[in-house]
Amino acid sequence: MKITYQDKKKGVIELLPEILDDLWHLSHIIEIGDIVSSKTTRRIQDTSGDKIRSDRGVKKTFTLGVKVENISFHKFTGKLRITGSIVQGPEELVPLGSHHTIEAKLNTPIKITKIVWSKWVLKRINQAIQSSKKLSAIIISLEDDIADIGLIRQFGVEYYGPIIGNVSGKRIVDKNRQKTLNQFYHKIVEVISRFEYVSTFIISGPGFYKNDFFKYLQDKYPEIAKKSIIENSGSGGRSGIHEVLKKGTIEKLTAENRIAFEMSLLEEIFEELSKGTPKVAYGIEEVTNAVNLGAVNKLVILDTDIKVKDSQSLMDMVENMSGEVVIISSEHEGGNQLKSLGGVAALLRYSIN
Image 1 (cartoon, rainbow, N blue to C red):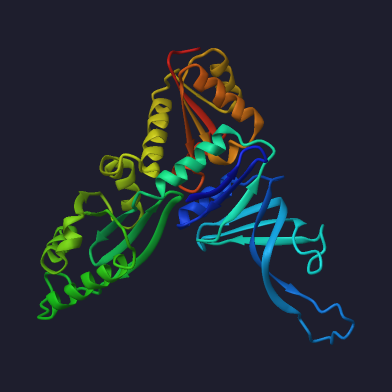
Image 2: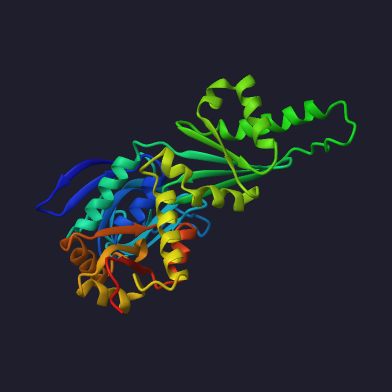
């Protein structure tokens, strides 16, 4: 993410999304009521009176501005769509007030105008700028001859697989077993090699396959092996990937990795709850009471809730009393756990019961 233009007096910031994570950040930066403008494509009908019934019009590309009514980010397709009524554009081509959907695209600037830029939104922009400089990690979860791949992104885990090797068991006599095994490992390498700028590969799972795959990398792909570490887990598949995330392995390797940090924080909250400790509050009513008493050491809030005025007030109060505010992504397991607590929780300095 880059800031390509800024006019504080007019409340305008133009951003350039460079990676998929930036579109996710934009989905939280843009709010209903904002004016968003970008290059977009729209089918223009012939209004000359000579239009024939089969004429579907001509697609044209130009800059349009819409007053935002709906924002949708589809994490599986990586598409961000902003829908609203048109307030800016060539009036000879599009009637003002009609509706249009802008699809935000990578490397295409998008201009956002707000009446007020909250400090939390500005923090989010700065976070996106800093995060775009950092690299992803990939978890390779192996169990027997099945591999699942977890690409660690800011908005959550993107899964690939399973990759199946059809390797015979050790007790079965198969003179081609090693060849089949190498072909299986090569398939995994083909998948992980599609992604550029990956700083760390974590090879996890029960049994010997993870160690054997690492040896294969050392022999055939030493550059990948240099970036790889082995991590034990009780199972393979997606549950094995979640196990690695909960261990905080990625957090140790990449201190700023948000997913590992957020999931370990939620683990801490649920661990405190399981002990029946009074040093945890959850739900808006309990947390608001704790904030008013100055008891909150760490406020944890779901990213979908930070646009609510009351939530921003709580966050400001916590920071003013030297507390810490952590915004949790709603796009991974930790976010779902926090949602079950009402979208907000707090670790307290002292018991208030």
